[in-house]
Length: 132
Image 1 (cartoon, rainbow, N blue to C red):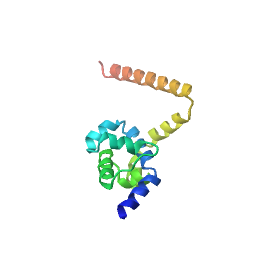
Image 2 (image 1 turned 120 degrees about the horizontal axis):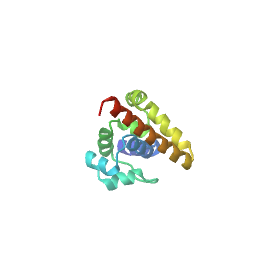
Image 3 (image 1 turned 180 degrees about the vertical axis):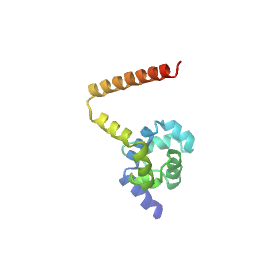
Image 4 (image 1 turned 45 degrees about the horizontal axis):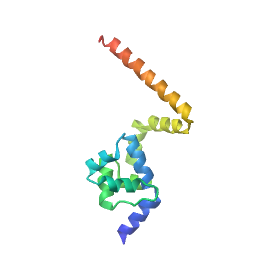
């Protein structure tokens, strides 16, 4: 009975959305998560679909370990430890991503082109500074 409660919580609290966000933040492909977690890719794909299934507690733990978050975070989107780490490491990146997502497609393409040009310029400047 307790497992049924966990499963309903996983569905209603946004497991799918939190898993998608973690994969994106970690720049990890589903097949990479499958290999690292031991959870079949087909199962992960089901967890990520709109009306997909939810993982067993065991699978959720395996997924969370690979992603470096708690099952609680995957289920609710909240975990004090994850949030503290994110605020220091990913806070600005997350805000940037949300801002970019709010832009229209042309503006997103412009920003991507600008960011790539800036990175190229900074890489070149670093090589000059280091005497390469």
